[in-house]
Amino acid sequence: MYIDGFVIAVPTANRDAFIDHARTVDKMFLEYGARRIVEGWGEDVPKGTTTDFARAVQATADETVAFAWIEWPDKATRDAAMEKIRNDPRMMGPPPPFDGKRMIFGGFEPVVDLS
Image 1 (cartoon, rainbow, N blue to C red):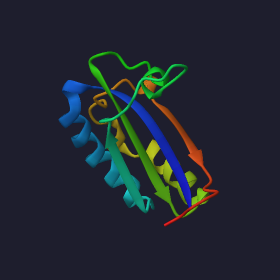
Image 2 (cartoon, rainbow, N blue to C red):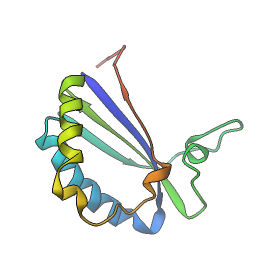
Image 3 (cartoon, one colour):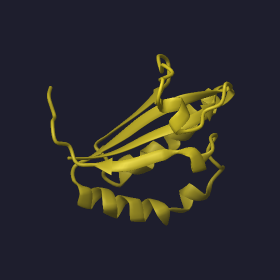
Image 4 (cartoon, rainbow, N blue to C red):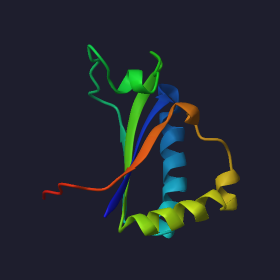
């Protein structure tokens, strides 16, 4: 397995647009080999004393932190999918309902997986 993780500041007023955008884009990830995608809307995201999710993405008072991950069968599938997604004309649609420049993302190799 391989995991991509994302933290995003989304204008709270754009919640429905964020969900619509996620449903559209996530279908492409599944089409290109993702096994599972989870999109979470911040509900209990505490402020920290040193750092926190909101500070990490420079969220303002009128924004909500969203957290998402994509599960892939392996890194090779993820890498091939990302290349296809970058070149997919469907990605040239309307802009996302959040500031992508403040998105934090990265790929992770699972080291513990408990069920």
